Length: 159
Picture 1: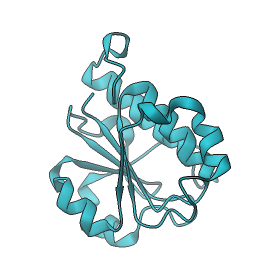
Picture 2: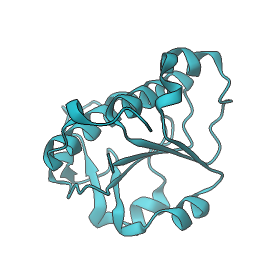
Picture 3: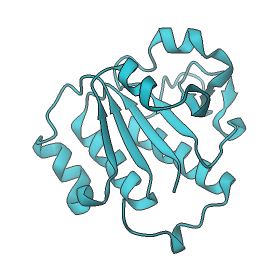
Picture 4: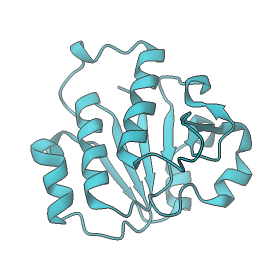
């Protein structure tokens, strides 16, 4: 699997745990950027991730610039309720990096301003501000897997 998921400063341990399970199930690397607001030893984080943590290709970047030095900008697709195009219009490729903001502040404004042509959103009814972070990651990740045509049934189990 060559897709990657990025969480910028996640704030809710069970959300990150659920995203970690998604990444383990799909063979997707998980990058966490900046302050998590909790410890990797958090009970709720571990509980949500169950016993899948050994299957997660987890990368921790202390700040945005460290992440940007590790990952090419042209691989990144940004998912936010501020996007104008649907997530199904995102140009998914086998090396795409799917970037998500956190639960309280969303995608940082500086990123939205710098990459307006790479912002996508999950369509939803008016009056609903946003989806749960783990739900949003699941929707986008599996749409990317579908569009690329990746076969998870025959994927290796190693991170």
